[in-house]
Length: 138
Image (cartoon, rainbow, N blue to C red; front, side):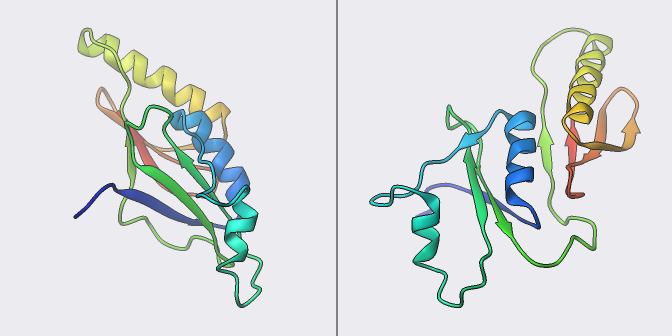
């Protein structure tokens, strides 16, 4: 039986990406699973090859969104994502007011380290996080 959906992204710098996604989506660090007191302690139970790869685990504080797992890999991103996140802005109003809200969110994410890829006027903006993973603001 399915109990939840997690989204996992490969990355080269999990701490940097975690900082971005905490700002972008309002996520917080997820505590380590019991009985471990730190993520490092938990990770050590899987690291039988000593590769030193790390990760970051984030969740939405109200539990309204999937958990985000950022796993360190040695290679950089080389192709377009087959799956991307859509960040939906809140608020009602006219289409013009909604578009203005989207653009304010885009500006906030640009300041946090995202880049704008393409603008679909009046509807959504395609963006990339600091490691190039695509997402949309709508």
